Length: 59
Image 1 (cartoon, rainbow, N blue to C red):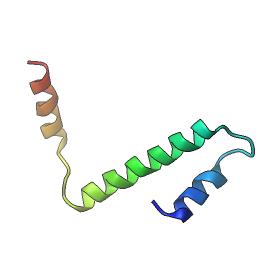
Image 2 (spheres, rainbow, N blue to C red):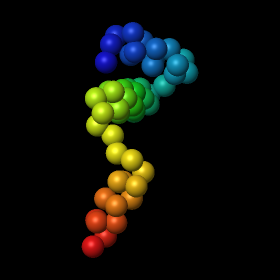
Image 3 (cartoon, rainbow, N blue to C red):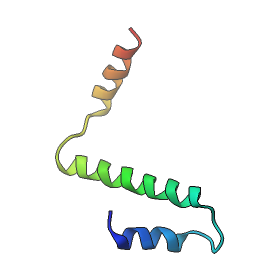
């Protein structure tokens, strides 16, 4: 995560916010960035693969 990303997250919050709101937003941004990086690396699954994986959990 870059300082610019953090600054943008802070700028998007209202003038008065609690620290938990900022932390939650930063965690969300980090997870989205990691998901996009996984897609770029080809580490994704199709809808059908996910459905089969979920079905296997129920057994």
